[in-house]
Each structure stands twice: as C-alpha cells, then as structure tokens.
Image 1: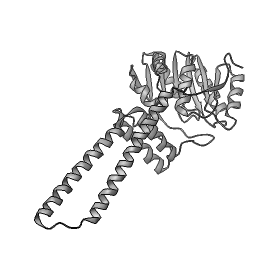
Image 2: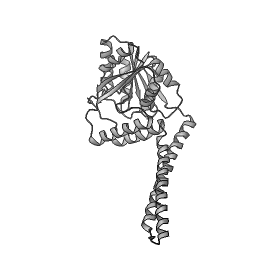
Image 3: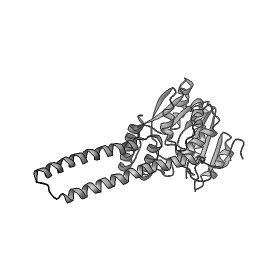
Length: 307
C-alpha cells in the first residue's frame, strides 16, 4: 500500500476534487492506497471537507492541527502517521500532476527508494515571483552543495527513507533538502506544474523570501561564513586605506578625509549590525531546538479508526 500525503491550508475548494481524482487514478492502476490530508490549521472549511471525504471514502484519512504550524510540519506529520510501504508527498491543489504518482510507484516497484519530482515548467508565474524563486534555488544550491534548481516537495519515499526521516530529532526542517541529503537509491520523474482549477496559491514573493531565509539557515551555515568573508574584505580595505593615509602623511599631502571617514564608519557599522543580526538569527534557531517543543499539535483525526 502507498500513502499519499497532502498538506492543506485553506484549500476547502480542492479537497473533494483532489480525493476524487487521486482515488480514481490509483484505483484504475490497481494500486492499494490511502490518502492522508493534513489540515495545517486552516481558517476556512478545509477540515469539514476532509471529514466529508473520509466519510465517503474509507481510504481517506485526515489530521487537523491545533493551529498553523507551516507546510514543513504538515509534511512531517503525514510521514509520521502514514501506514504505507512508501509515501508520496504532493500538494492538494493538484498542481503536482496526479497521474505522475502512478509513474513514481512503478519506479519504486523497480527498486528505487526515492523518486524525485523534477519541474521542467513552473507554469504561469509573475516575473517577480519567478526571479525570486530562481534566485532562492541558486542560493540554496550553493549554500548546501546540492542542485536544488528543479526541486519540489513532490516526491516518493520508500518506508526505509520515511523511517530515517522520522528518527531525526531536529525541529527546523527543510524537507526538500533533507530528503535529498539522506541518500538512498534515487531516480527522477519530470513534470510540468499544472494550473489550479479552484482557489488561489498561498505562495507570494514575500512568503518565498521568508521561506528562503528560514531554510537556508536551518540547513546551512553559509551565512555565518559570509560574515567571515565580509570581515576579511573590510580588513583588506582597512589595510589599503591605512597605507594610503601613511604615505600621504609622510609626503605631507594628507587630506582632511572627513567624507572618507564617515563613509567607512557607516559601512563598518552596517556590516557589524548585519552580522549581529545573522548570528542572532542562528542563536534563535538554537534556542528553538533546545526548547524541544513538538513540531506540531494534532487536535483531531478522522478516517481509518477515527470517526
């Protein structure tokens, strides 16, 4: 049996369609399955729709968070509660093509333990959003040393991989990178992002920037190394200006240099404050990890043994 994990946040218009579409495709392909919807603290009727779907289809289960914990937590909750021999993680808005799930399962049956969904087309996006997305993936790829340029949350994981991820104790998790980092036998399935049939995307350029900052710092220490590089650069600049000042002083041509001094002070002060901010952000992440609070809180369940 496979478990299809579908995180949902304010997706009341897509639950019934997602459940019906996936059930039809997997039933036609004669693949035993369960659909596990994870409601990430939605404020609309998403949970009611999930309950309705679980009542009409015994293969549908649902988890409801006590509040919004974020998509990463929703995916991890699904992996921890899934019962399948392998798990497929995908968006419930069906922008990840449902028919590709069958292709992923067939590759898994051939022995592959991780089947990555790789985007070949990002669909219709604004220029600003596309630029922000491309910049983020270029930056994260360099920061963590993996090619994340076509990465997505759409992937199949064998039970061994799922169990490995579930054993990891860290709280701030970057699912896309972590599922790649664990290794195992991999292959790819290429897909084009589909258009929504209902509802609106919850991703904005601003949320993508927040997502980038959170995940780069949770998976890489590159920003801290950048502070060292900035310090080295400022040291070189300081040495150059010191030599110039000494030469001018010895030659009797030293200028007042008030503007230069102000500029250097402003630049140096800005870099110091920026560096402290980056260090403080890492300290806050360490503080969150040390507190050991749960990644999510489930307030209700439905389907399966829960009514």
